[in-house]
Length: 319
Ligand code: BEZ
Image (cartoon, rainbow, N blue to C red; front, side, top):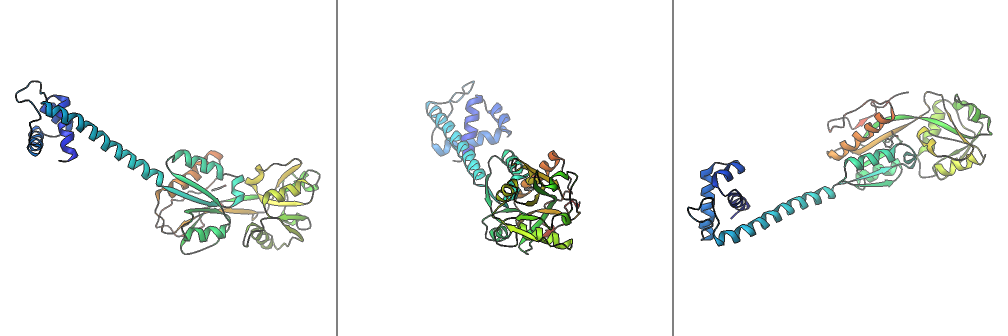
């Protein structure tokens, strides 16, 4: 006896007719009658009163019907529970560099959670270098970072290049230059760099940008993290260069001034295992673009497919 036999039997009882039950089940009547006969044969009992119109169950048939309904409903429950467990078990662990938390990362993750309510989404703060190792060891599935680090096992996609701004106390002459300043204007200033985590990190990237403009800042101080650097700037201790999206960090008497040089940008990369075929990755990628659309951020869309070049830096916008 299979579940299909129970389904056929229940349909015949509820429709009180083989013809109507066959229509409901989308099968022809003769095979339906045959299946019920087989069932009666297997049980060795009669399930329907012969010649009754409308069709009536025998007492044994009635007992069998009540339990068949329960069994079928249990089977449905098992099916949907298994599906739900399967969905809940799907998980995506995302590594990210701290500064992205002050920009679009929370919106992107919130949207991803809303659109994928069954997905178990975990966030882990780590440097771009750590993300590479974590991807290869399977501790994370996606990384969002700022450094252009390559590895044949990892696919890297440039999402966009973000402008840099300089934070200055309102009493500092640079704070009045609301139209913007150049990197050359900053080299004699006391500047706080972050983080102190192992290099390469954001401060390495910043020094490279100065070097690409043939500039060497003369008075640099490294501090543990962005909040600390900006707190010190708000105390009138010096200046600090940050990615523009982190200007959501507010301190009294703190102004953010755009840096006007073309190369004064910090890229944002998405990295994933080169062979990862997961649809969840594509869905997360879509959320990034949806937030860019909502924020009016220009980008050049790329399709996240497997046959894509593992390193794709061509998709970002060059300012
Ligand atoms: C962005 O600001 O473009 C961004 C931040 C976090 C993850 C992805 C993109």
